[in-house]
Structures are given as structure tokens and as C-alpha cells.
Length: 179
Image 1 (cartoon, helix red, strand yellow):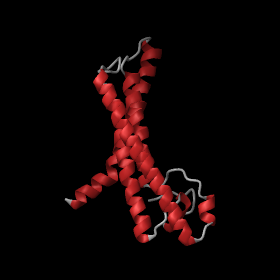
Image 2 (cartoon, one colour):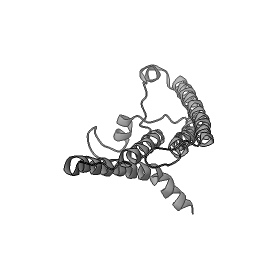
Image 3 (cartoon, helix red, strand yellow):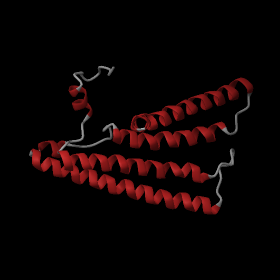
Image 4 (spheres, helix red, strand yellow):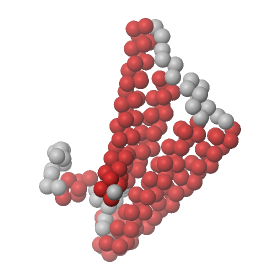
């Protein structure tokens, strides 16, 4: 059971991201071919591609947090003594965590408003609540990832890795691929 949970945790976001990207590419390609070759369009293709794009972006946020690849400016933190750096990083993670929780809460409000109003997408007639639900999922996953990161910083004194540090730890140079 634990192994299955680890596999799900490891592949959840990448599966959604890759599937969404595939949907975007296939549908937009099909729509372009339909327009130029057959002088028609697939009315719902743009809407479904937009839907998939939104999910790809929002799940990409939590994936970047999990992989410690989100953008940071660390010039001041890097210049601090190690003891102070730990608490500064913990504060930064806590602020990011609060932001993610706020995004989740506001996403719930936006989704509830859309459902209450009965809004739907024009071509597919899907409820816009499903589109806005990406905000909730992303905020909740990001909050979970950040909670874990904050716990590791406070409990073990671990610093979030930067991309170049992660490569060095694996014995790779920048530009080399991981196996």
C-alpha cells in the first residue's frame, strides 16, 4: 500500500501535465489542419485545449515546488550565516505556504460562485466550476508540498535545493541529462 502511495505521489502531477500537454498539442494541431485543409474548424477544440492548458499550468506549480524548481532570488540568503539562513528560508517557505492556502481558499470561493451562477463554457457546455477547480487543486497540493518543505527545514535544517546544487549532488554538470 505504501509503495502504491509513493508511486501515485511521484507520478501524479507529471501524468496530468504530460496528458494535458498532449491534449493541447493534438487538439490545436487538429484545429489548424481542419481550418487550412477543410476550411472548417473544430468548435470545441480551442475550449478543451484551454481547459487542458489551465490544468497543465496549475499542476506545474505544485510540481515545481515538489522538485524545488520554482523561481527564487537567493542572493541575500546566500550571503547570510548558515544559522540565520535556515530561519530566513523557513520564513520564506511559511509566507509561500500562507499564499498557497489563500489561493486555495479564494479558489474555493471562485468555484462556488461559478457553480452557484450556473456558468458553463460555450462550446462544450462544461461547468466553469471544473475549470476553476484547478486553482483549488493547485493551492492544496502546493500547500502540502510547502508544508513538507517547511517541516524539513525546521526539523532537519535542510535547505531547499537549487537546480545547480541538485545537479552537483548527482555528479552531473549543468547541461548534462539525468539518467
